[in-house]
Length: 83
Image 1 (cartoon, rainbow, N blue to C red):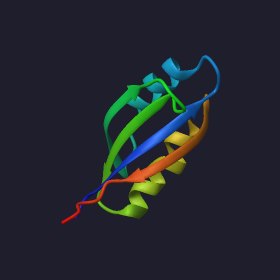
Image 2: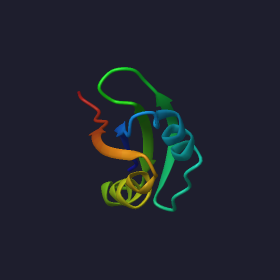
Image 3: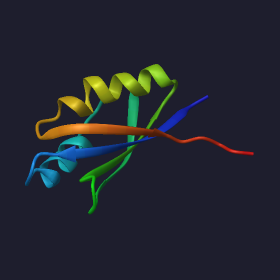
């Protein structure tokens, strides 16, 4: 079963565009980047990821996204199917 998550990124001031571009170009063996959007509000970039399991999703976040220059903090929201 695949796991899908949304990674909400806070970037350094003035770095939202470069963070978004770097994450969009990110390739990681554990997860696939489905979409990347720069947004307004408390977060600067929102990334949608998909992986085979939660561990792989976490590896992509910690070994990939959090290592992108300009990423200050991430918050991950897991997608669930209710009902």
